[in-house]
Image (cartoon, rainbow, N blue to C red; front, side, top):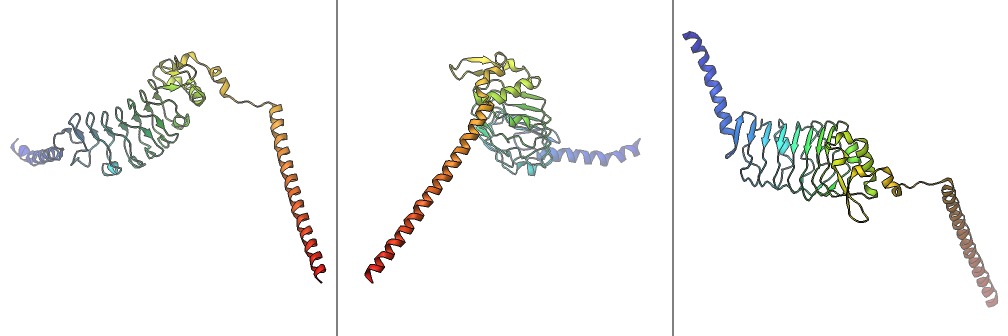
Length: 291
């Protein structure tokens, strides 16, 4: 047994040194329960911690006061697959923070101070599966191309924000979407909401509580109603349909305007031409009189 123990001793020393090195690389005031996890939740941080191990895969930063993420953050931590930034002070995400080379699968930006999600925010991160953007009380605008390129995204949370409308293209270009949360927003059921309503009806199976769980305010009196009480007929006034007579009137009007414009131009050109001829004749008469 003794030779066996002697053979194992160097291996045990190497293992202990690796574990000790991992512990030494753990940022101050944070916990590192395993070699690839850094837990800095609820530490009162006002910026990202220093000396995060480059091979970190799970980074927990919730319940702090972090105001921004450097745009090169995920370039440095290319192995990161799980990032929790819930309940911080983020007001915006710099374009390019997520890139096509990112391996991020889970991103939680809920309960922050985000105001808008512009185009290119997530940089076509094709590995992202779950994205949480709920409980941002100032988030009132999501660009139609905000989620462009997120081909693997299955779950999107946009509940309890300040969204009164949303372009349907922001959702329709997510081919893998399985769950979307939109409840708790101050939706306004006007003509701008008509296309989104049609999409929600068609994709109600992707809503955790169906259309019954979403309410909107009527533009006339501000009364809150469940989407389940509405139908496509509710937005009939928003649908502009042209009859054959309308089309003929439009075509005839266009032709008439063109003809009038041509005749006016010809008339003005004729007047100018006559004026020039008259001027030349008068000038010739004056020269003959002088001779």
